[in-house]
Image (tube, rainbow, N blue to C red; front, side, top):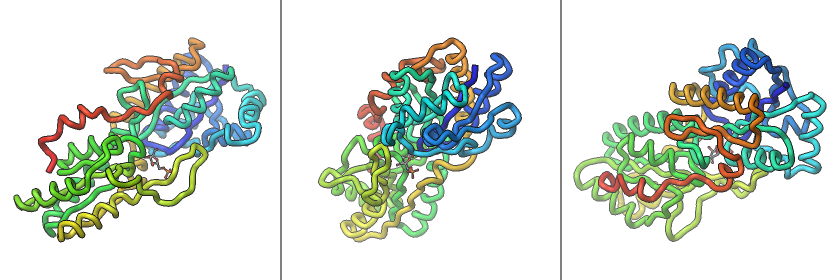
Amino acid sequence: MKVGVLTGGGDCPGLNAVIRSVVRKGVQEYAFDFVGVRDGWLGLLQGHVIPLDIPSVRGILPRGGTILGSSRTNPFKHEDGARRVRDTLATHDVDALVVIGGEDTLGVATELSRQGIQLVGVPKTIDNDVSGTDYTFGFDTAVGIATEAIDRLHTTAESHMRTLVVEVMGRHSGWIALHAGIAGGANVILIPERPFDIDQVCEQVKSRFKINYAPIVVAAEGAIPKEGRVILKDQTLDEYGHVRLSGIGEWLAQEISDRTSTDARTTVLGHIQRGGTPSAFDRWLATRFGLHAIDAVKDGDFGVMVALQGTRIVRLPLADATAKTKLVDPSLYDEFEVFFG
Ligand code: F6P
């Protein structure tokens, strides 16, 4: 059996840990051969695959990024995309794929699986918004980075008695904002799932100043004012139809300054949340996902995604996992009401 491994979409810490564990178990226990697909689905469109064996995955466990490269290429947006994917697999005698991706990459995997390609999905993303799994790897590392940033911003905010707004990633879901905001003791947390009232945000900022604290506002990049629209970096769309976000932090700082006559600044954490070495939890989860994904290949159980449910790794139909985005439950957000303002 020859297995191809592919990483697609935005990178995240832990991708290399999955690749390593898939290859280690696949070679050692099942005597599989492997190839790596370069740059996500782009590699299958362009016929770009590379050898992958135990020596090539040595030492990559703690390394961020992906040794295979990644892209936001959507084969269904390219002429004859699905056929070209199949041709590359046939040319290189690849029997099955392990596809490591978020909602977009796994959405393509769902359709290719429906069309007969043998594959198993592994959920990744710092955003933690893939359905069916309690956590995706990459998320814990991103939350750790954002929490450390918030801790640091508290002390400088206090020195200058000003508001600091922290913009974190999270296009459709506020998982990073909520977890890091709570861990870092933020006073306001704004998430895409819950359009916010700018007057209320300003009241919460003012009440913080009144008791001599400098407010910290954490905003997911996809957070939306009730009376407005999501703020975009520019109008360009990627091949999955996503616009580039960022700008809500700047907008908030300006509004807070203008409306409260106090000083406010913004920090945009951006890709710092995605880069660098994975946390121990992400290495652990990514390693387990890899081991279970290659077991599914061995069992011929295709069209599934491995997922964490409680402490168990389970397999579920890819179509179920990619049907909808996993959003923050309003009741979870409400649990923390006492800390806001
Ligand atoms: O991977 C998802 C994500 O982290 C989103 O939260 C963010 O909007 C996006 O990646 C940005 O990715 P890029 O700059 O690579 O397009």
